[in-house]
Image (tube, rainbow, N blue to C red; front, side, top):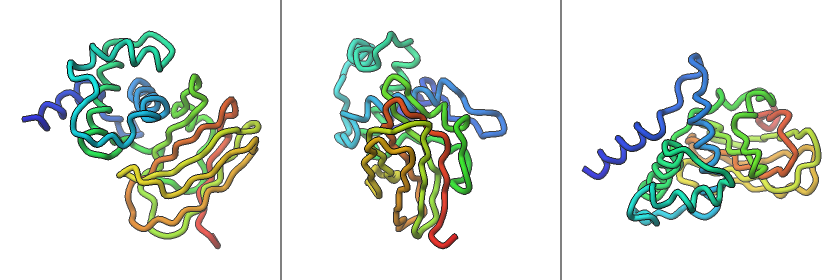
Length: 202
């Protein structure tokens, strides 16, 4: 019964991202990005099976708005709360459809919806990366100061790089198993111009 209730809450509060042919749902993307660039700073990996706010999303309004830096609509708060429940109960990322397969080049306009300007950070679902070695090159419109981290569907870190006023950074990672991967990027005021995916020797 508890799992069924969770499924209903997620379906109501945060509709699944539609297939690319229909275009992404901006509200769903915004909630996913906010959760993973703000909320996850404290709540990531809290796999306790219980929530910090036992009385529900309404009780968390003040806490959420304080950290987001702005008033939030009821539906948005419910979506963030549903994602928190998902992380706590499954120890995994809330499902998010990638821009497209992680190959070739992703450009600035595709990457822009996955940025939280208030936090100076991105959360980008990369999709399933094939097993083996990968090179992911990040190019910025200025000097990025922060860090880049890639983790898998179980939130295990597979690669991490410090950004020290870099205009570009290449992340190397070894993928043991073809599962969903996610990029967490703190870049300050610098925004992504492009992401290029390569395999060594390719």
